Length: 115
Image (cartoon, rainbow, N blue to C red):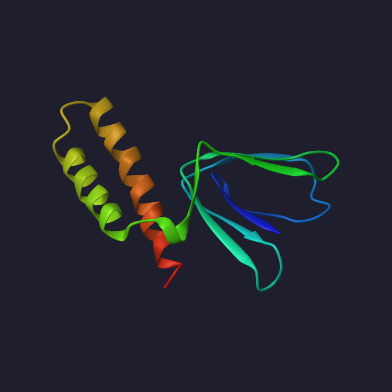
């Protein structure tokens, strides 16, 4: 089974899943190879596609093993983007900072899964 962070909510993909396309938000893709072999990856977005033959693919710009995320760098990013939101001069600057904050908060959540 694979769990993906769809914009519409967490989506589980199992054998025999109906065809579907889901836009992904920043979050954790969890791959259950077996009940005890579980891999988790942070993704900043992308798409999950389940085809008619029940094969699935997850297309993302990058996937990072959550064990490789640096908690200090993530916290620094959160502080940076909070400051940029507070000091934004226009809507575009504010929107870009909000996107950065959303991604870093999702990374912070991903890190919490390793504890």
